Image (cartoon, rainbow, N blue to C red; front, side):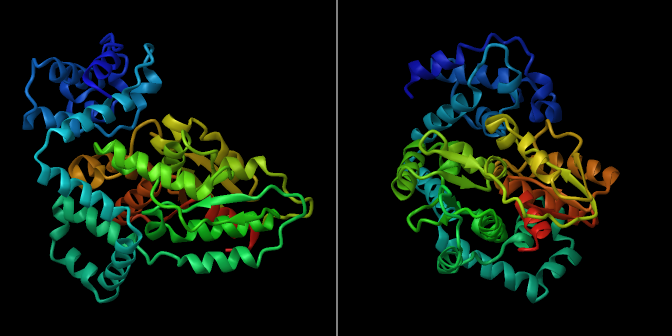
Length: 402
């Protein structure tokens, strides 16, 4: 997007201010520059040359979560997410080559399967040899960045090898005439939520659905797009398009599905399960307790179909399904945001923890991988006893196939 196109997109904003109550960072900072219309004004000033691209301006633009709650509230239908992505790309393009290289390398490593496998091993050692407990006792978690990294290390696991998933799909006996689907695994989700892919396979197989897990797939590209590298994001989309072809794609991570949809026939897992015919003799076992549903911004503001999660969970006997209060506000995870802006991320998660303390559920479900890790860490740090998981994992337990 060139400067003229970027300015045209920004000029759609009439500065009415209806977005302000919906913006998490504005509610925290009470600063106009940390609101959607304030950031639009900063982008306009940057493009027209009235403002310089300095550290102060960067602080306000980089502080945006891209939760897109403002898009839902905007009467002028300003495409704020596309605007912020383009503004970040324009700013990154003007950085010195070595800073662009480092930023790109960091994102490539985070989305690469080799590093994720290594991080899973290191996180296991961190927990197993008492380093996690030592860090906590030493009081090091008072630093926001260390606290976020500590929480992620508690959640990281070794990814399930592709051959194990291939064996599982090969052993399945699908119903005749069922339309096959392809499972999208993503990148970070393989290490933060390895059980989601396995649970999805087992549930789909119980429904008699033939599932494929293409080898050539990889990161959806969302991390690169939201951090100023749209060309790399498009390359990753093209890679997935080549891997999946014209197949029907389903995935458990709502943020990934939102990113894949322009290029692939992709569906969020809960909605896909509801749309499939269920065998007449299929029985769901009871699960006793309350499950709170967290509605991640990627599901609520991009896919805009959170009802599927509630409908699916209500099929489980004995389960009390309730919405987590404050679902309209971002939890602070927001892709790489919790790593780049840990203080704000933790402040936003604190509101979710307060709601969980009042509600006292047995489980918390969410369809966003980053949100699950962030909220699980925040809840554990607050001493709350609950399990944070994907809805399909709970469904697999009810079916007795976990």
